[in-house]
Length: 283
Image (cartoon, rainbow, N blue to C red; front, side, top):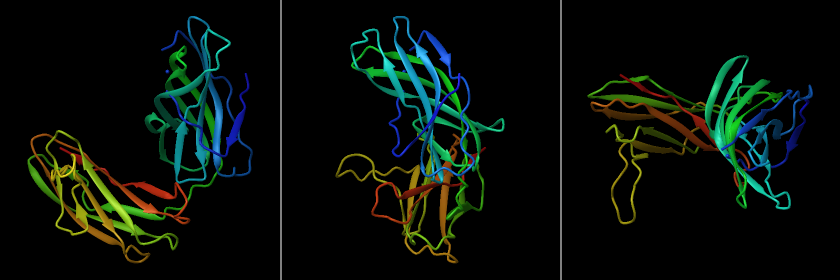
């Protein structure tokens, strides 16, 4: 059964769904040869069936024209009462593969860095629930989206001089933030966070860094397993360096990082970008 694709100018709201029978999506989507304009590319991914005639037709979508591939799973519902108009929301988990290689997994809606043109095989386990109540279905769906947009050139890069932490020790690391594009500005914020409950502590004597406050005002308690550092003079040819001390106790913890920054047309909504930084392992 062939499927049809839809290019949407706005992102469809993602939604999540128990089920009795699942009809998997059949056929695959093939895009035109020319690069698509920015929008959301969708393909029919499967139909979920319930024991009393309930039905949810699920699509899998990914937007284009961005450094990230944002994945959603909109659905249309039909309940046992055919006179009722149902509105659906979906949630669940997704996996993206390309050429047999897994590129990423996550919760719906979710995203990962765009890896360039190619056929993206997206599979998901979704739960679809309706308003008013009457449809509550869950099952697997899948679709293939052929993306033709070129991969955007990286404007920022984050690196760190070490990759591993050790138990019962303090490691001093230097993060380097680099901006390679003349577009945008010199402002960026690097965030690092360890695993809650492990006792890991992230500190820096750099005045640009702070452990975030937690609790209601006037609480002065700070989250010691997280650190935010803001730079304002990041320019091409002038990277910023931040020294950080990470203390790990008897429980190991990984530490992940993200960089947030403005991109052109900053007064428009959704013009901030986030870059995945290095992940530190522990042993």
